[in-house]
Figure (tube, rainbow, N blue to C red):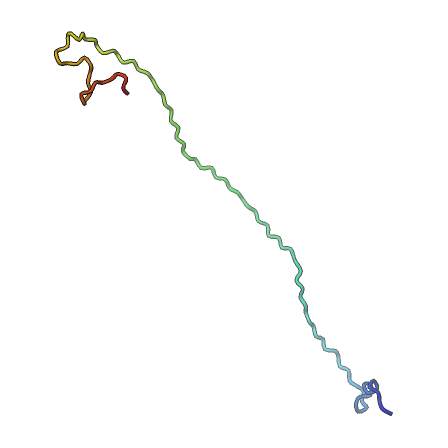
Length: 99
């Protein structure tokens, strides 16, 4: 009668019982990314520096001064060829209204 395969496993090929060794352990590591929050606090310091900057202000005062009148000389008493009106350096008449 023929021998079935399970019987061969228990008896061995030549009738010996099989030797079962300790199992070899094969470790396969699998890495799966998973978000991990990492918080980096940042503190912003706003420093305000006040620096003096010169601002020039001018005050203006105005005053009126009365000038004594010119001495009056009768035109008839002036020498011939002399004008009764004062003249400037260019020979033009000086206006009392000119600034």
